Image 1 (cartoon, helix red, strand yellow):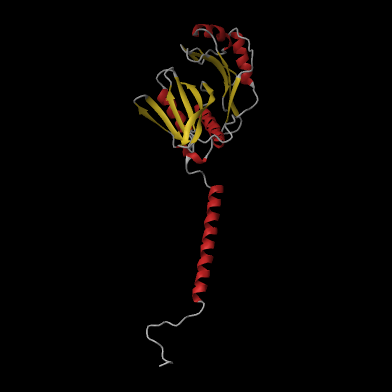
Image 2 (tube, helix red, strand yellow):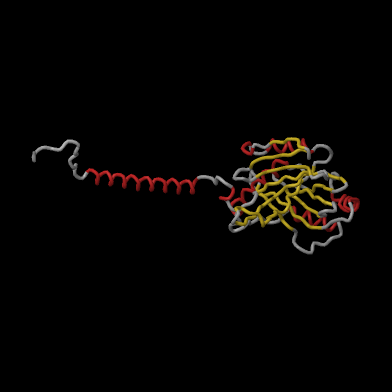
Length: 282
């Protein structure tokens, strides 16, 4: 009886359980290392998947380039102006984190009833990847496009014979903040100074300069001085002698002319009277 094996009893098999535990531990460690490597590669190479992953400082250059694309799409012959950037703090990225939004824009003259036609022409000239389109809404025609990385582009009439094209980041973490694109003043500053002299104003300070990188290289630039002629007729009378070939825009709210490649615009509207000279993208 002592030499017989009892039925139902499995004799010990030696160190096999220890070997299995070793392989399981090695496989777990390898899997963890693989996941860590994939996460690192994703963070390094992949674009952000939500807006909250890209700060205002990081999105700023994309907005600048988008404004350059809008300027080029409007065309060198358009009466346009780059408007100053607006950073608006106070929004909430998450319930626990404050943020800010950046908006930049271009204003384009569209006198008469041609707002939709101008918007459609601009949409056709924008990059194909933006998927730009124009549709009619209850408030008039609207251009909408996606410049990538959660930057929205919109165009709409402003009700005064002009269109406003904008690139907007939406609410973002601020990061190190937005640094506007800069560049040296050129022909636009000289044309603005000449217009101000004709209007009887002395340039007592350097004008505000707004720039945007053009798709083909170089910078579009607008030099701007607040205030202007007291009335549209006064602007036309003072600036008319400078308009070689006549004005390119003469409406109740604005008067514009060209001098070389620069377009000078005197905005006489009550909300924001100013004079601006713009060198467009070539």
